[in-house]
Image (cartoon, rainbow, N blue to C red; front, side):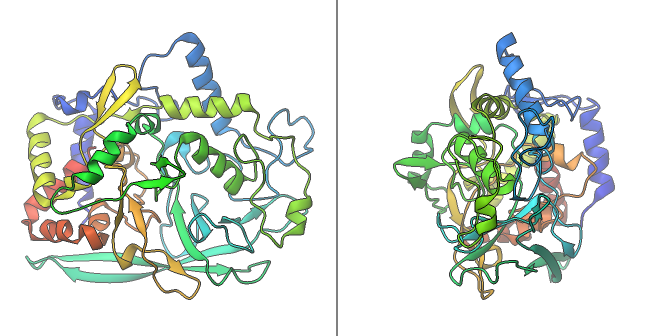
Length: 432
């Protein structure tokens, strides 16, 4: 099912430059990542911009410490409850988080959001924090248990999926609110985030008004602004997304998030000393935004014949109805259009992928179409793949097979392809 050797050989040839570069691979938004520890910007930066970009990456990689730590400089204020002590712990140099390899404790890159809509859980806040500084206790722990699902394609070949169940254990403040949802969220890749921010609102609205193949997406709106970041497009800007992550997952205040994500009943959290107001200075915060806004998308080269064949299969199955291969951008220097493979719209992908209430029942859930660019970087990393919002899918094939709801027709067309066609399509997606 996973074809590791065939795909590894293909990627190795591409990354070694043995294949000619197609026009699509020459997209100015994508740049070869020669050193994964030093991700490049998508355009040439001025000396001043380069200083901001590098400072942003440094802050991004910095491990924060509790308030009052001697010689901490400007990096104190962590917690008192948190999930990770650095941004890099979940988004390694801008990459996606790592999901669970098997049943067991949830890794740091997979957080459990709580609450319903914009409302936080009344007991624990927006995120269940599984770590704490000295003198405080974590809010709880998360255990992921997988069961296997099996089925067959029309041609008789078998497929396997793993379905997760989330157990919240050792909850320090009692059970979560009865109306709260349990929302597992894997840290997404940040590659090209600034370019997604540069897609005009009008272009997103136009995609919602002109559905393809009968698939209509919804625009995420809040207070007159259009959301485009996060698994549910519930953040309207990189500023908001960054401030939320700092507050809810690291216990750090910043511009736009002046309070820690303390639960309503957690007096100890509310009384904890802080590392200043805000704990992440505006200088550091702006530098982090600069790093994300100029961060490039990793380029994976592919020969023109493979590109044309894969793109045709992608369109034929209907995947391109939501994973749009072409979006306009403004104010992004040499980049005018991007191949992010998303429409930045919300879609219902059915009960199998829906969030669940405290009683375990699925609740209708809308998902932003996840961008596919940068997948080649993840595939060639040598680390296990973890796809979809909770990392349940161990391969691109599994991710496709989990699609239901509005995406069910595309999944069914994928299943009716011949074995060879499915392999070619999956290999093409793995080179985005």
